[in-house]
Image (cartoon, rainbow, N blue to C red; front, side):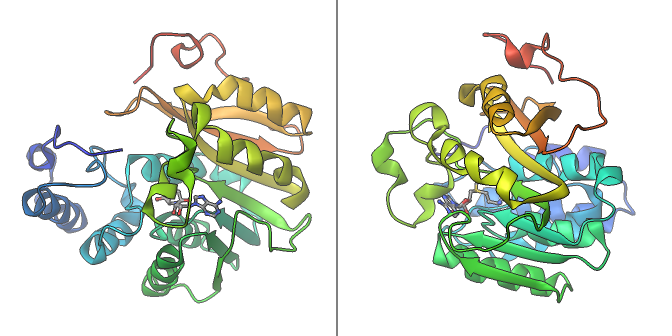
Length: 281
Ligand SMILES: C[S@@+](CC[C@H](N)C(=O)[O-])C[C@H]1O[C@@H](n2cnc3c(N)ncnc32)[C@H](O)[C@@H]1O
């Protein structure tokens, strides 16, 4: 997934309120990155992080190298989805993020949920686990643990996870790109971008607590409706709770799954996300 400098983050400056220091710092970091490197590995974000966690994203971007996945548009969408469903998350005690990368989402969960929850994060990339631990610590949270493992295979958390979060490697790639534990596993999703998603899905119902929710990013190439159908066969009730078209993606969406019936409206099955050729902003 080679990045291109198609978007100029400085354009965002026009919209910045003079008093909005956090946002100014964020734009400055992205702009610095844009000016500094001529061969970015990842696309620079074209959307802003949610206001509540702008400072977490800025702090990470200051420390970033090229060995972990940076806070990106999909990471922001994921955090926005959790914020959107915050009423369903109020009693969460254990949060588990699979594939934590920079730790942006895990640290954001700790901030947003702001209660006595414990945040657990795992990644297969050892640089990501180290980075994640730093990020969560720097964001002020103390109740967390970060583990290097493949998906949830070495965890014994049956029925304990209240919020399960995954921004998986979803890009359609040759399977060879999925090998190892380096940066390419951040995006390489093999056939239909579904290989990692499909291998994790059967573990979800087992991990979730009675009122647990699973938030996952997917893109149109992954066939989100098919993922929701697969979840249903595994006892999970799935819904699209947020979707957005962002440059470089045909569409991204966040699906929420739970093992109980959720209280939000049916998925917009007629929406462009589920048709063959269009997306919705
Ligand atoms: C798209 S990045 C998401 C990073 C971060 N959660 C975010 O949203 O900014 C996917 C992450 O999953 C990790 N990953 C990929 N395959 C994995 C596996 N089998 N087990 C654990 N982590 C994995 C990658 O190393 C990467 O950090």
